[in-house]
Length: 265
Image 1 (cartoon, rainbow, N blue to C red):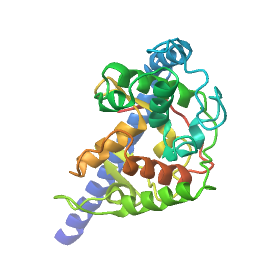
Image 2 (image 1 turned 120 degrees about the vertical axis):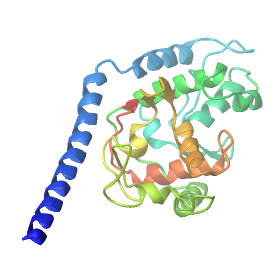
Image 3 (image 1 turned 180 degrees about the vertical axis):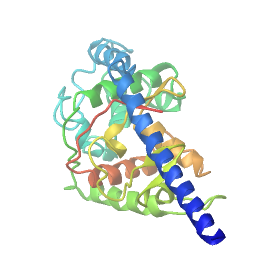
Image 4 (image 1 turned 60 degrees about the horizontal axis):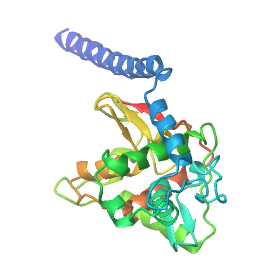
């Protein structure tokens, strides 16, 4: 009898825990839905659009001739095809590092100074706003990163290796959190990123506004923070490792629709 009561009690506790977890997930989604109509990311989008058209820098020029991969000045659909190889730089670039190229070649800003500026400060804050607006111009479009060039395929392979690479004092890898189904952290479900996570998940949700700290985060900062949490050295702006991880996730997300700029905890 006691064994039966104990088993019944354990069963009830397990059911209650499962209900609580489901309720937490649903509550977070409801919270995001309530805030979605007033997502502060819209302010960054507006700022980014203004910066794109505004004549600035030592050359007093706009970014309207910046080539994001679809031709000079073409923004719509560019985000869902980045990172990609650019012949003029001989590099695979994401949207943020490509903006540095355009700001230096078109507007005359010093690239090294831009890249060394802390996130959220000065021109780096402007780069985040520009990236937010560019991402918004591809909202609802499906990811289709190119893999025709040898460097694009090389970066995909590097990104895959980095995704599973375990090291550091915690012996973590990206796959530690994003390599298995039904994992959670701080009451939130973690998307599985070695395959297509689906619409609006993983890379398809960034840039995003972080409600917890009132900041707008681009994809580079998101990846940098993941590496920080793994206790890896903090990557430099536009590093090969963050670009490669973005290529890996972006290619894996083929067909998934972007919801960026999104709203995050």
